[in-house]
Image 1 (cartoon, protein in one colour):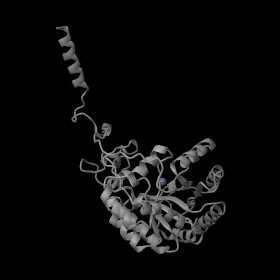
Image 2 (cartoon, protein in one colour; image 1 turned 90 degrees about the horizontal axis):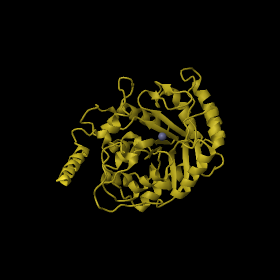
Image 3 (spheres, rainbow, N blue to C red; image 1 turned 90 degrees about the vertical axis):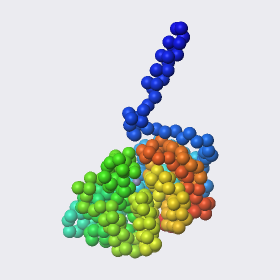
Image 4 (cartoon, rainbow, N blue to C red; image 1 turned 180 degrees about the vertical axis):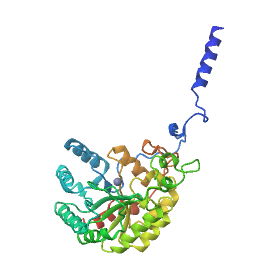
Length: 355
Ligand SMILES: [Zn+2]
């Protein structure tokens, strides 16, 4: 008799642990794929890799050494470190990474200090030339989500967009110096959409939502500003990072790439946003295989690199990753062909960096 009470008590306890969809918050939902289907573990990429989009994540000599170890393990030949900065901050980063000149390339920012003053363009060019002389081979990452180029350190430039006449002499000079310009315009479209139950990417979109009452350009306006700058400066190479944040409608980026030979796109940090539409992505990568650049923008953990290789190379379906738990959909591999991967991983970057 006693035993039966125990069993009943145990069943009630188990019931109390079951989570009802009525009370489980979407943010706490962490599904694990139940499918017994092929799972590809990619230790090393198919080709050596140039990572065109990273940041000074390693803060000490020890961390830089560690990063180089990880790069060796993961088949990363070279990492472009987008410092977004100029002046003494840039100089100390150059110094810090100087132990590995073949493994890291440091790109500087644009110094916007005094950008409302008359002779600003000339001052900015002088600082650009100084950074170039000590090793900056490109510019990045400039960033404008609608309020102006706020990413730059030490001085952000509210109200100044990339097509602004003040900036054109600087962008032109980048071209003359052979420095590509990596620029982030807008954000994924979910961040501009109403934050409600119909928002497809709400869980991540909400965190990065754009307050459109504070912006002078909307998503479309930002893409237009990029297009104008690219058109104004045909001798300057532009890299629209994160697929120009047009993952929701890649035909926009497609027509820009078709119109402007000086435009490239990097694929960094938009794996979750694109691994939801693998067949479309395969076509997109094939169509623009000469103009897409591999980038990460997601730290320096080995698991991060492996996840990206899995998405690009494998045909795995319906898998999750802690790196992309912020969207509530599973990931799918693109299964990119060998020749496309070769261009994406290093050939296009090599061409662009004139290595
Ligand atoms: Zn970045």
